[in-house]
Image (cartoon, rainbow, N blue to C red; front, top):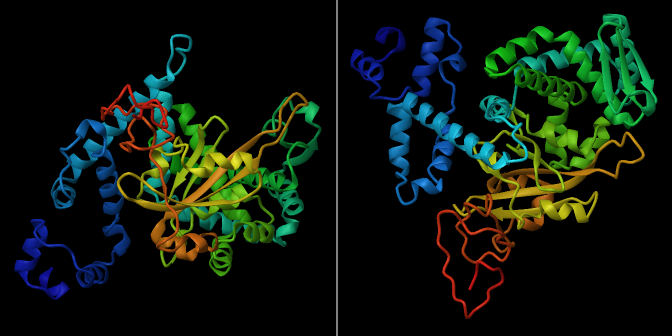
Length: 444
């Protein structure tokens, strides 16, 4: 091996005993000498694992005991299995805490397992950098087979589903859909699309159905790889993977990557070019992580008026997307008061990590006249070091630009002077002076 790789036998011995790292030159030599794809030899998850490890150790139960960065790197290098098990144990601990918060005396229907299924799906997507090359390739091939420009896709998808799979697509009145937006009736070989959907979302639903019928084996392979513990969780994962395919079909990788870079991530211009919605663009941008053509590494959150996170994706090694969304200082909550307006903000976490985020409302379909107008807020964010690539960040990408001091949530936020505090932190005893009233009842 040493002769083939052009190094000494002693160096090989050091590599085998984990006392030297494999250099790029040696990695390329291994690839050439043994006919192995270098990407199969190296799966670079160390950055994500290091970030996860640091986030876990910021938990209040580890107060004042966190090891330094060199100790963490040594753990990753020399005890990777122990690190993996520790992260899994902490994830289970958090899932249990989340479940306990959800369960009340009046509602015992929740289950730890259901929470873990959702967490497993999110972790599965994140472990792949929210990017699935096989789905990208399948969507590209399907787009070529369908043909036509962006504004022809709905009609072309209808024709393709009929000709290739014998599926009849029908636009159905809201009253006949029983509050469903799309029904794929396999027995009758038909797809019903509700009139409640706008043209953009009608096209997306047909692309979703195309994923179910054209790449079902690929979806099954990916779901098996995800190791989701329940059947319901596996079906939820199938939905998310089919949505990924649909977005990749409507917004082909090379085209949207070029458009995003050329427009400096102007989401409205991207949406109009590809005839898609703001939310669809925002979610698609989190998937642009192809080697050699990486977009800005974004995280994505979707929040309802009560502050619940209804969807999250993360193409970054950062954990703000994992637990964030509950801090009232973050202006994503203000977006409900300014519908259809993009709200940019530069934020900083207690650990001094800085991010740039944009938030905007997105409408939801209404299926019956009793429904009140429904809006959710979509938030897209990245680490501040990438903000210069985004046009919305220009006024905020200066040293003197204001920075909002946010936290994950009040229970674990260590900020002592926050005027928005709703709960006393679990790990810090705030001083109280009965003779002085601060801006909140937790401040003196």
